[in-house]
Length: 103
Image 1 (tube, rainbow, N blue to C red):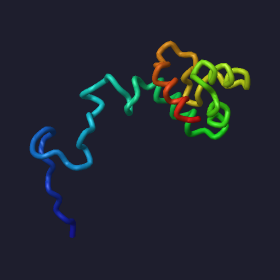
Image 2: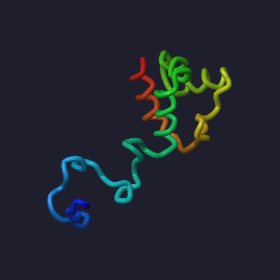
Image 3: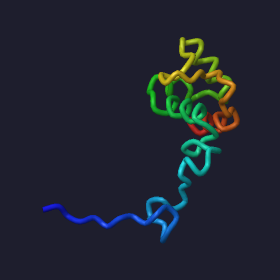
């Protein structure tokens, strides 16, 4: 016998569930991507933090420009998802802060 499930109220009706408080659904705000300026910036930060080889290369860099020079020297020009480390869409201010936090 199947258990009956209570239907969810329409979006925006009733109290906000605990797991969605302080989160904006992506369709409501296209200004950020997982807290980052855009997809490209998020993707580069994700790969630099998650890939051990990339992480070890950039963790002692002073800024993103230095990190890109080092990555290029070792043959890395883009993430495995195809985002170039030199893309004009990247928010370099955010990535500079990110690189400083790694060291």
